[in-house]
Length: 152
Length: 345
Image 1: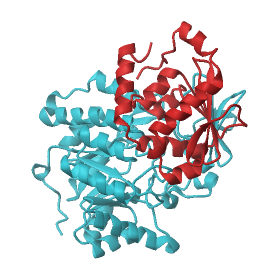
Image 2 (image 1 turned 30 degrees about the horizontal axis):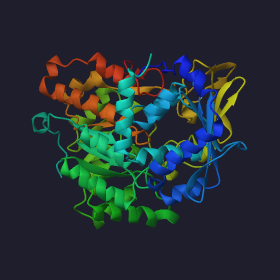
Image 3 (image 1 turned 60 degrees about the horizontal axis):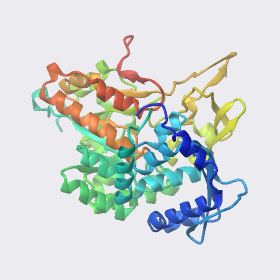
Image 4 (image 1 turned 180 degrees about the vertical axis):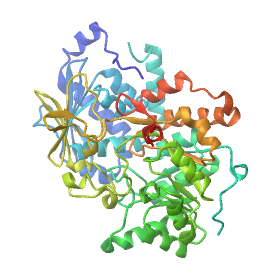
């Protein structure tokens, strides 16, 4: 894995940074419900209940916000301080989701920043590591290969 | 029992590759990429990687054993923390669960637990954990005589010469660490982190329990704290490591440095021909807390290296591509030979 992160091209960054936040958070929460909700153990969802999470896509210049309520992921417009905030570029998030990158390595290399409750962060990380979503990962991997090499 | 020096000719020449798994996908990654043995733990403090969301319940372990056995790999369960009088039954039950689920061996540190396992499940293969802290052939002979251990994992405090002497004087298979994060390695006897967390890693299963860890961005850099104790402060160009006390940067007599250990990773690829020649039975990879991607990468590299070494040890060369792949997933910016290379010993 190379140290440099691949950043979104400037035109995409310009468009992404102007997108309204709420529709993006709605789409993201819907995606989580479709792909992950049933795969997260009930006791993990219960542990996350009521907490708000923030995903900062640094090169797109926006933040996705969602909360866990009633064992579902729901979008949030404006949050109180989230229990966890992740910061990375879009490419690295995709690489994590596709299981092309190791989260600890991204953390050691300062490409993934995690702020907030470490215990919940570890629970989320380890639970995500437990989940097999081969179709979704395969689509992501193909898409990443089509775009080009992983860093530069 | 035979306590004589084992003949090198009787030893297997192909070293086994023992890989970590904290989750079922990591187990599959290890098996699919050529691990001979996969080691893992239950979801509680009976093992030394007791972290939220990590490890196996009965169902996932049963499925993992089926998967590994179908592909010719073995599953070892680490029960390598020390039970206390009040919690004895929990560790006892963990031994029973492992035996009933059909694991291939358990990795145990506590003599009482070894005695229980040997008596209750005489057919269950026993490995002495690195947490058992047996650094001499006499110590290993004790566990062999009393509990019939079949393999012992050497603590990461011995030089190659010292490890060689142990291997030559014991009939027990010897497993050594090949790759992974390093700490001060006073295995099974270190209670340093308990000064910051109130919990001993030897009884609770972790040097840096997540509830005691805080990562805090500050104007001076990213701070890591353990139980409120400042472990390190990282500038933009610094690379954070796991926040344990032994890898902390402290002010000592006015100087700021790592008084115990700098965050580094062990990498013994270059020692493989020597380890093989001296009769080491198995190479262990650290990292049950790491992701399936880590397990996949490290298993693939070490499988290829071990196969190369077994085929033509005289012509064995460490490939730059292996080092590059391992450097990409290592903690810290440097890899070392750890205690294996101690010219002064």
